[in-house]
Length: 477
Ligand code: BGP
Image (cartoon, rainbow, N blue to C red):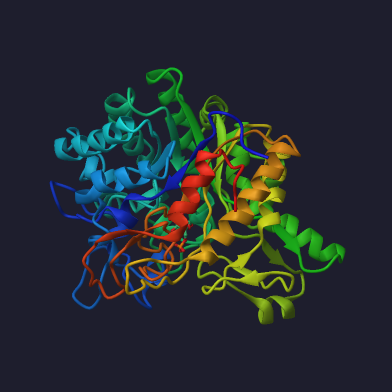
């Protein structure tokens, strides 16, 4: 089995996790720059601890990251060496508009991404651009409180206009917000939200979600007007919820948990909130400010494709005891441990068949082309004395997931545009801020404590993935 001709094989990164150079060439401060390493990381990411500037008591991994800013030529050449057809990356909002809504864009920032896209094109690599990947300008958080405020929509549109004007000829594929549903779990990372004492958190989150959805719909419309022929997608942190048992209560709970995620994508694909979402908000006492024109905006700005990240399935239960004792998993989304699955070193469960299930579920629900824009294994690698890096665990994870993807496409008929594995080059982990949690097929010499030469090295998986791409998925050995 193989993938159809023109399938977009490649890898994915995000600006704040790889670029570094956080205060170079006129770049403004962004939410992700103030999310520290260490025990306060999640408190800040969740909007529970206010940190709108850097301080001397914390360290900030994104400030240097892997310094892609100064290594992009070398890095893209290495990606080309694997035969990449596509490279997913994000643009740092404050590199383009340092204050978030400046009238004049930062010329050095605009030039940087032009150079990156031209470098991709040189190798025939199609860029896939995330407009906003966990990124909100600090100036706008100070001015508006981030996406709590509707004025963020206009700022975002101003930013989009600059991108579409400058890169329209170089970039065909766009995503509006990375993992838009993560706003519910990491409100500061996802929407620049810091909760004030006494605030109704659900209300704040859903109001911000509404603003992002309006911004996304308007961006889709603008992209279609300014760049005819382009394709704009939404981006979901996916992973089907399984019921812990076949008790109807558990099945119902799993459906409800899935709906936390579908809330966003239903609106972006269908152009309207599903009826259950309205009822749900009513029951939770959440009443969001929806303007009369919003219905038409959502309806006119539906996406062309559905992209998603998939690392694992999730599992839930209606039984509070089970939830209390068995819920573990990654630092962001807690899940009941599924006894049928193995876990990674970081406790993320490994479920390749879950990818086939997720692909089928999303296609059944939306009938839109799909795109897997993140998938991979975060693991600790060892560099051998001769400089080689043996990562059979990563190859094994990818092999099984690519096989599941081949099944979904060839046996089930799911239309899939591409597969960009996460962190094709080692980068800073979003949830933990670590360097040690590596996803790459290209190793970067950098440690959790910030030391390292930044030298790039090829892992075994580099050569393996090259062969997979060369044979269009036929040779997975
Ligand atoms: C997704 C994000 C990425 C990325 C990935 C892996 O949620 O879109 O930015 O980092 O997960 O997660 P982590 O880095 O926490 O291992």
